[in-house]
Length: 331
Ligand SMILES: Nc1nc2c(ncn2[C@@H]2O[C@H](COP(=O)(O)OP(=O)(O)OP(=O)(O)O)[C@@H](O)[C@H]2O)c(=O)[nH]1
Ligand SMILES: [Mg+2]
Image (cartoon, rainbow, N blue to C red; front, top):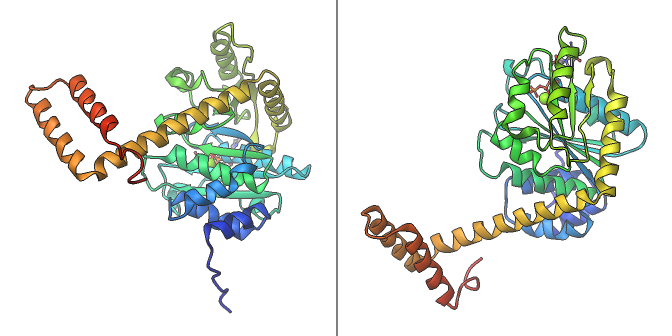
């Protein structure tokens, strides 16, 4: 018998999520991921219950063992009765790839457990807004009641860094083979990493890489009161997972006690607010035919060198302020 499709409104979905209904959770995440009609209303309905989960970003080169680590950590927490939401953000690989995904850990067993929820984000190569969508998905999981959120991304590119910025703590995973790993650190991750892991400690070179990483970490600014530990793990045999878990817990305590978690979330909220405003302004300008045509005209003059960009921006700003309908005629 085919299961009946129950029509869901944002209100019924948010009520379902808050009541712990898994089907509502899955649908709510899809709505948010696809930016489908009603997703904002849904998020508003969940807002009061967001903010309790601790968000941990896990990043590192392809095949480093991130999923194996996530799996081991989640199993450990679930064994204790903690609830864990997992989001795999994957901008490069297709959702149902074949050979490419052959060696990957799928986290299949975990997904069966009631304490755990696993979700892959099928980003289909699009880069815009991945961090924002991930953040909103985390809000849904947070409201549902997960204690820990593990967000896995591959690599250390711009998207990954943006995604890591929506996390409370960041774990960067290396393997002995990634000799260029230490170089990659300089590309912006060192400032935001809280824990470094050298996985595949069963392979040669792990200790040496850990030593190198420790040296790099030691050069972080002296005013920083959290010195990221450098750990070695063998995820497949669940070695070193206890220590990793303890360090994450210690990091959370540190961030809470020092007020840094609060500061970081304030900063995130501010960035989010500014992004939403920019998005709105952009929509307003491009949706306002008369203004849009005038801006086109200004652009043309700029291209001819008849108008400098600062003067152009001034003119637009003045006109926006003069227009009484700013912000009231359209969303
Ligand atoms: N030898 C060894 N292999 C490991 C270890 N941890 C993970 N692996 C293996 O490495 C392969 C990749 O593991 P994944 O956990 O899928 O790695 P990942 O970083 O999530 O990979 P992507 O998501 O594709 O970037 C799998 O075959 C794992 O079994 C380890 O500690 N030692
Ligand atoms: Mg993976």
